[in-house]
Length: 344
Image (tube, rainbow, N blue to C red; front, side, top):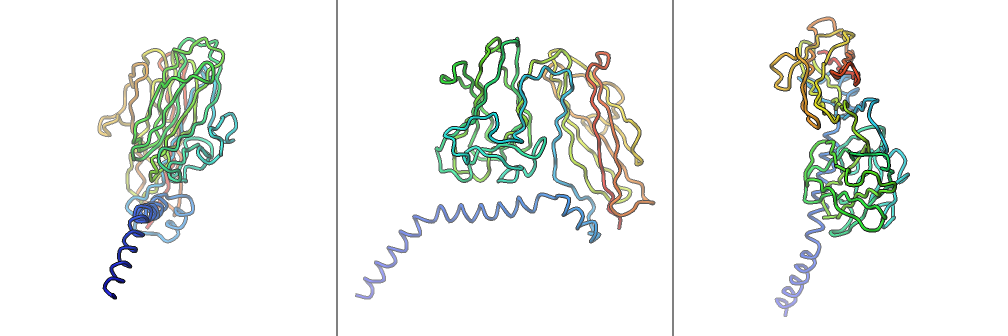
């Protein structure tokens, strides 16, 4: 009788464990992932603490922050960075939780592209197959080759975000699907020329949950008519270095213009430390203009070297650079590189 009792009890326990095992495993992994993400982000407070403690760090990187730079010649028709949410966006089903606003910290990249906030699809909390969208209306009546661009992040999993468009707000056509993995903030472009001349075009982003471990994030949505000469830059965040060390800042450049172009990078000479420009290989000096076809992209390197002596704890050096289009300076942008000294 006792053996039978134990057998029944064991069977019941096995059933309970089977029902809860998947949720328990996911909760456990999510808990670990949350701690990992938290520890990987180094903000101002962590930097201050490390400098104060004079930790023996050969190189201490701050979290990467992307700064997109649009030159003023761009024919911007629509732009939104989700600083107000939902703002110009219509949410379906409209609970306010499926698509939401954060600072990149809700199981996301830990940063935003511009401003303070980004939008994300709550794949982490919603059960599999839950679908939700956010949409907005743009006027393309005066355009000929309009383009939709946005920054996107999704570190892994099988979830994607589908971009669709409609001229009547009811019948949508899928025009782009993101990759399942976009590990860094990346600018994506979608051709809207099929909708040129239309006064009312609804652009919609749709996510379908796979109950994953991270949330797809979107920031800095722009609809524009490309100018002949136009470009954007993506500039990394500053780092912390010891005296005598060097570091390569990789700056991405994209030719957003409708024509081939070349770009000249120059230092304004305001940095007190040593700065050198290199091509993407980090070995060849950048002495000639960067040549890019329309829609082409590449990178160049700004190398900073700290002096061995004379630095103070937490000293910051700021160096400014310009990128100029070949077309008589039609497109010119200035960006800054900021580096902090960590003295022994």
